[in-house]
Image 1 (tube, rainbow, N blue to C red):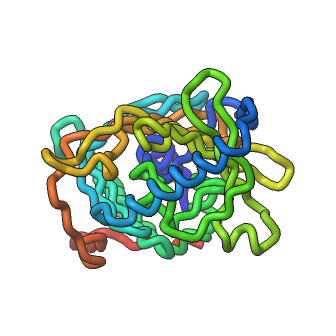
Image 2 (tube, rainbow, N blue to C red):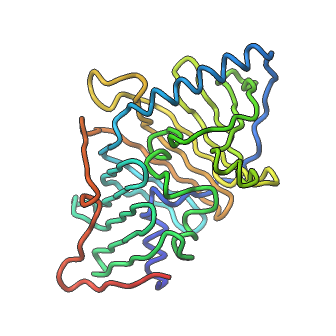
Length: 279
């Protein structure tokens, strides 16, 4: 991949650039009585189970802001997603014309840069893609990262404690597959028991170092009359410890009853565009 592509990636791969604004640390907590812990776990599991009945697609306008020592900027466009891993971002220029497209099915990605008349594609495990999607972010769960939810997998909960500033409950957990593989990744989730939403999601390595820190805010119903269990975050702030930057996604104007199939996440190259394989 050429240097020019990396320049555009730095300003435009909003959904996948899990970037850093400093070195996050494990949260401070206050202990809960055993009965309170049990009640919290029941409420949390109940909320996660109800969210499995929520719509599995979303379509929204998005404004993506990036601040780093290398580049600052904002790009607006549209984001579409389908559980568990289909994502499509369309970035627009100031005139409202397509500037770039990024799609992935959780295994492969394609990135089309209109001004360059080029498309880049490869596996999400490619070094170039992983440079912008650090360890801890799993493209196979892309929809759930975007919707402020956990993937509908079996969870192992290790501890529950209270946030010292009264923002909710901290649960230390892992997906069952992660835990059975030796607990390589631990998740620390800040859960608001009153609103029944996730406010923060951190992923830590075995040494307790935070790799990804995602904060969610401004939850709202995607459609009038929608379920409170299925609210979506209007603001997503993303940090990680790999490349010194801060990203914020502001979402809104959700399309009610969005429905997609796998073909909707395919972007064909226009005539005359060059396809560049990425390794």
